[in-house]
Image 1: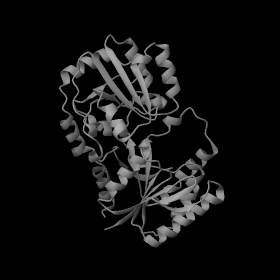
Image 2: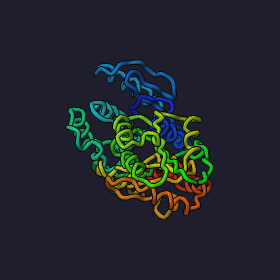
Image 3: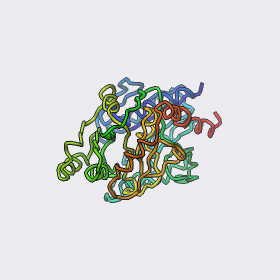
Image 4: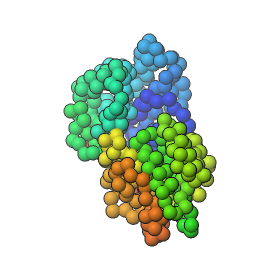
Length: 357
């Protein structure tokens, strides 16, 4: 079996959404390769869940961490290195790192939603970002492919691009039983609560609805305080519950109370009208329908996704209430769609076929 290293510059935290995604991807890659997993953290390097080295985030510390990893990589002789996009000064260290790899080792970089500059379009360009952009133009000399999610493109940075959809390992998620809708509509939203999630549209919509609408918002982030203030200002705070970060059984319990879920409602704010969110795939694995404002081609022609306008207008929950009554959703059918179309293994087969391993 071919050998792969999954490399992520990320502080691993059990239950964290990105950490869970990385673990799910590694598990799927294990079906195609013998896959090792490495987290380059701010204070250490984790290799297959064991501490390889402890070093801080100073310049010397970062160099030592990459050098320690290089010694392992050289010994293992990987066929493929799969890398989550590395930013800032560390992109320079990573670029130097891959120059010393065997020419037989293929390198793939996974980038965020493409085009991906919109999420930070209002932020000033930092020195680290300038370094990243400079290095990205150099990657074509050594990187063999780029996997991405978003609008179709043949190349990124002059490198062949392979379009992925975000995926899941369906068996990791509990099936949510159908909940009969009577006089109260309960809706769950799970996310890192940034401006492009657009949950403010849901809160305003709940305040204007003629129906009884209850929002269950799970997660933390920079928009949390704004959302809380908004619910108080609109006098709907009794209908909006904020749970903070949840996972496992605690998260399952909140899902069991809800009829439908909320995907991102504000992707237009970051310039990404086309998106492949991981939360929508997790909702599908759980067998629950959801509300979405952007384009996600994998859900074209499905009956469990409610499309709402891609703008800042309040969500019309009166329409969604009526839609749910008529939709006759089947959690098992929704979950079966996830098994057939959204498993991570299906996505990584594209990469495996690209290299003809």
